[in-house]
Amino acid sequence: MTTSDGEAKGEGIHAWHRQAVNDPNPQTLTATSAGHARRRPDHLAVICEGREVTYAELHRRSNQTAHALLAEGLRRGARVAYLGRESEHYFEIALGCAKSGTVLVPVNWRLTSREVDHILRDSDAEVLFAEREFRPVADRLRPVLPGLRTVIEMDTPGSLADGFLDWRAGHAETDLDPGTGRDDAVVQMYTSGTTGLPKGVVLAHRTYFTLMEHMTRAGLNWYDWHPEDRSMSCFSSLHSAGMGWFMVGFAAGCTNVVMRMFVPEEAVKRVHEDGVTVMQAAPAMLRMLLAEPGATPDAFASLRKMIYGGSAIAPPLLRQCMERLDCDLAQMYAAAESGSVVTCLAPAEHTPDNPRLGSVGLPCPGNEVRIVGRDGEVLPAGRVGQIHARTPALFIEYWHQPEATREALVDGWLCMPDAGYLDDDGYLFVLDRLDDAIIVAGQNIYPAEVEMALAEHPAVAESAVVGVPDQRWGQAVKAAVVFHTDQRATARDLMVFLRGRIADFKIPTQYDFVDDLPRNPTGKVLRRMLRAQA
Image (cartoon, rainbow, N blue to C red; front, side):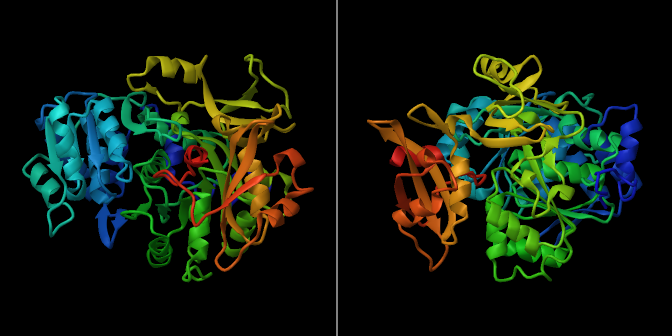
């Protein structure tokens, strides 16, 4: 599959990818859906809870959804919100939005009512699809949302989508041409809100095509997709990583295995029973998957590739993945605003003795990365600063926030929220979010480095490190630690263990031993909550 120098042999890359490189017509989700329905109508597009949808069926159903949206009086660019769990019907709505020229606004059902309120207000959604469980939130907000003209209840007590199917019944299934191109908006994702209320990240059709186009042009095939692939993401497609994964698989014409929500036991079962071959997960999800009793070699036998990302991975967990998953491993670094992947650590780099395993790899073809100092100067290799990225998949704007957009996009470069450095060969090492940096007596400490060191202790399952006020030094380092089942350690044990592994001033002086860590709906640890508790 992958040669030692990463060059492709031309095998296994789906014909669509080769065609996309030379296709003079702009690639859009609308055109892709029609192309699959024409070229591979009977190939399975989606499997969800045993229900199977072919590419021809997905095309017809999403056409019908698009006609129904237009019948609501929506104009091009109107926002359409979805509040519920995933299913095949969610993707019919997503493609229906693309085909009607409207913009899908996914609302994560795990968000607080305050965050849901903010997203529905901020997005100016005119239509809302909501599952019954979440309908009360919509009903409570509707009086203060004059622009919300229609609420469609997705399900009935006995069916997953009867309300939705009744709403679109009778509308045409013919193809539509919304007049949109690859640079037009198609999805508006809201950031996870780790530091405040979410912002609407407006993404274009190009978001879901540029990575594979540039990979193919560069002759790299480790991020390949085969016609027979079955793809699954542990990230929800209500999140940018999950939506991106689904849409790239959809663009490639493979079969997408969809879970209504991530449950580790169910994920292991789906890999085994549905024959998943390519998969995406966050490190926290990988840890949960490998802890499942059913996570045997046989359960993962179908996997040929596992992509991980979303947060730093602890070395012990990465070693465990390399030992237990008999497949290619690759790491990807991205943000919702980058539109697509910024850097990749390819499978060939995943060897036990590779010192670059701690990096997030090299910029993907077509991308650039630089490190910028406090005064805006570009820093040389080895110097720590803010990560800036330039990629053709960049987001269009923050919805209704022109000033925030200008701050995030500087001369075509995206100012990432992370601190890091490049080594002499251009590999990117991400230290942590800039907002999470701890300053002790003028010395910068990045929590992820301390957490990585703690993860090496045999009793520690995971940890989160924050800075807390200290009269003498300005801040002190505090760690919240989760132990493995039936294992324990004292604060002194951990402090002694860390000596010699990290600098003395980085070693936490305060510890909380907890059962779990606070997380946002996408699984990221909420350090701000730990700081507030402290």
